[in-house]
Length: 69
Image 1 (cartoon, rainbow, N blue to C red):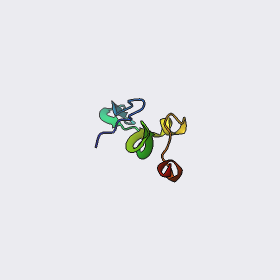
Image 2: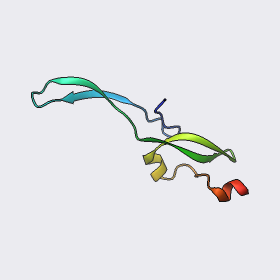
Image 3: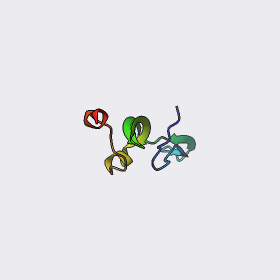
């Protein structure tokens, strides 16, 4: 599963987990990506969008009213 936002392009990044003894091991920071139905070019589509883009309303969500019109 590709964890990439279609709006901002946010994806996984690499970093280190640092323990109490300061031993560093590799880890991945995953974005909070959700599948939502949005209106793209007048048609509803399911895309993966990060929650920050959903909260800032960068895309119009597809609801029952938009689908009936």
